[in-house]
Structures are given as C-alpha cells and as structure tokens.
Length: 372
Image (cartoon, rainbow, N blue to C red; front, top):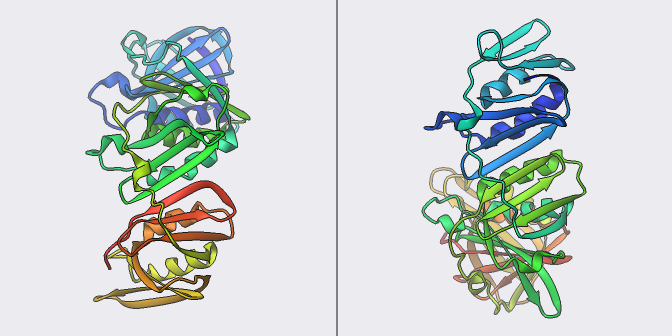
C-alpha cells in the first residue's frame, strides 16, 4: 500500500475516526484505524464494537493494500504536521511497519493485520428515509441535552425516535429524558420513515452524528434502520451503530395536560436573570421562581455565599406561586428556544412544568420541580 494525501483531508478524516475509538481498549485492534487503499480512494474505518465509522477520501494511489494502525497516534502526528503539506503513507516499509512521511518528518508505526479487525456493518437495513441536514441538526440540538448519563438507566441513554399520527398529520417524534427533564420534538414524517415503530439511538452515536453534520456538505442525510441497528450516510462518511436494546418508558404520561396557569416571558430576559442568579446557586444548583401578576422573580439563597434576586417582566394572570428548579436544567431548555417568548404551564408547585416556544409548537419541554 502506498499513497499520497493532503494533510487537511487526512486530518479531517482522522478527527472523525479517532472520536469513535476508545482511549483504553482490552482488545488491541480496537485502538486502530483500518486503512485500505482501493482503486477509487482510501477507506478509513474504526469501531468500538457498538459503533462503526467508514470514510472514503481521494488520494494519489501508487499501490493498493490494507492494514491497521493506532488511530489516536496517527491523528496526533498528522495534527502536528505543517499546514498545506502532503503526507505519504507506505505499508509495509523496510521494517514491516506503516510509514508516515511529510517533508523532513518521518514516522513508523506498528500495525495489526486487517484479518483481526471486526466489522459490525455490511448487511442492508430495511427501513430507509432521508432527512435534511439542517433539520437533523435541529432535532439533535433540541433533544440531546436531556439524554440520561446514568448507565444504570440504559434505556434512557439515547434519543427515542418513532413515527406517530397527530390527528391527520404524520410526524417523526424524537424524545429524550433523564427523569428530571424531557424534550419532545416533532418533524414532518419523511417517506419511508412511517415504519419506524420506536428505536433508541445511543448517546455516543447521537453526539458523533452531530459533529459529522457540521463537517458535511450533504443537503440530505440518508438514515437506514433495522431491529437492532441504525446507519447514517453523509456523503463520504457512513456511521453504523447498534441500537439500545430496551423499552423506552411511556413518556406521554409525564407530559402534563392540566396546566391551567400560563406564564409568558421573554426567553432572553429570563435566561439572563437565571444565569446571573446562578453565580450564588453554583453549589446547590437550586433557584426559586416566584410567579406573580406581571412579573417573575428569580431568587436563591446560600448559607455560605449569600443571596441573589432578579425580576423580569411577564404576562401572568393566575394566583401567585413559588416553584424551585435546577438552574442548569432550566437554562438548557431556554437555550434551545429560538423564539422571543416562552410559555410556562403550571398546575401546582409539585407537578412538572411544561415549557415551549410560543412561535414554534414543534417542541415541548417538561421540567420537574426541585425543593428549594
């Protein structure tokens, strides 16, 4: 195998590859990237046995062949090479290693044969549909923050996708929750997606897809689904992942329908107030929201640090109430509301609050109260 590739192209590809590879592996080959020089380009592949990424790029190919080499080390080497350089990669060199040369720099890396490299992709996934890149980015951004990070609640460690009929409208609904907050976003159902009865895409996969969406020029992303896998095709990049094998909870039960007390408030004004008050609430993470006619008061008290209070104008005509929140969870939700005003729906101080963008009904957020 012998080829010459532009440093910028190689660096971009290796940045995608190395983020899939775990830093510590009990199986040595899983620390490696599989490199194959083919007639139509160079294929780079990495896997952690749950997720697999393949990227094919152009290069000047002198000899075909394949091997595997340490992914993180290759990335660090190429990252430190000069901008605009060309990189020559040869395998095997005179010592049977992978040679990386650029200008006056030359490195030789140990390899593991491709026969030991596992492959989790390959089969065709039966459900196929397309979604616009910007739409997919928006869906992920508005739900990803609510995914649980508790490994014991493995069925909440991802986003839940399923097709749903909303009256006469068919939508693809995306849900994430960690038990303290819930994000639910709807988008028009793409042709082919009506067969998605319910899948849980792992948190790591969602994060990797989101990063890839910033780097791709593809206008539409092809998504394929089977009973246990999902695949994203972004032009030259293909990411295949196992799905979380579990039952997602009945999230609709926790979305209140009896929120008769409605508050309308400026998203920016409330977010800024909560952010300033949070300086004092950094340890407890608790802030109290006092809702009165015409205003919202955000306050917190810390025995060690002192107290803080902010007042924001608002539209509210029901009886006054005081409700506590984790300020980080509240800010996460407010960050994803793009309109000028948000609506809060309350039933009582001990029940979940419903929050949504007044100018956009495609997303709804639920936030559990906190004792303050």
